[in-house]
Image (cartoon, rainbow over all chains, first blue to last red; front, side, top):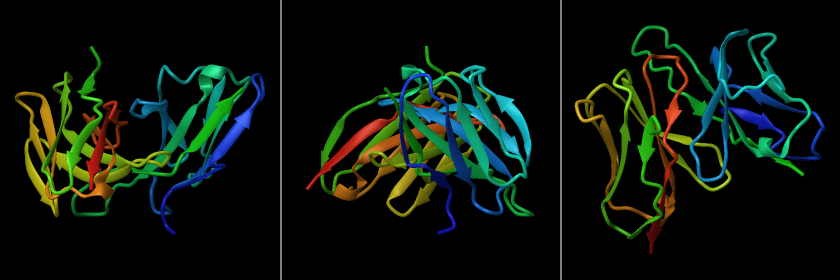
Length: 118
Length: 111
């Protein structure tokens, strides 16, 4: 399977605990995005990386959230001191610039990590 | 007003019907338009991608963009029960920029 993978698929934690999620993008993709999705809503952008550089962060990304992509491959999203409002599906997507041809940067999504904060 | 609006549904149609799904948006800078399908508790799956105005067809799916009206549509012909899912529109102003998503329309195709 060469798609985007995320781990874990589900996480249940108690309020105040720290959690970390991992995303492995499609191997040749240099861009990686994190989104958050709550029930009945579309995904909301959190942050994105081009290679190892974090280029943009949403206002949604409070200082309790941190994301890294240390070697430009996989990425981690950490939430410190979780709150019940953090309960959501956390989605990762990746995209690439095509060499020649049409550049689309179309984003392909992983299955998501569903976080429940009790 | 949200940047991207979409009727949340649910929309129920009989098998074989033509389905029309729509989004409106307010940001005239959007140029790249995508439709994703999302099954329950799964990640979004890309269906269609279009740039600027015009139509694009892929099998049973047709995407239309009318930038002058800030309105995009997805048509599904010969709908199947397996098409039952939430359909999300997404758009961006620049390549590589994050997408802005609509809230999604939940579709049920009844056998």
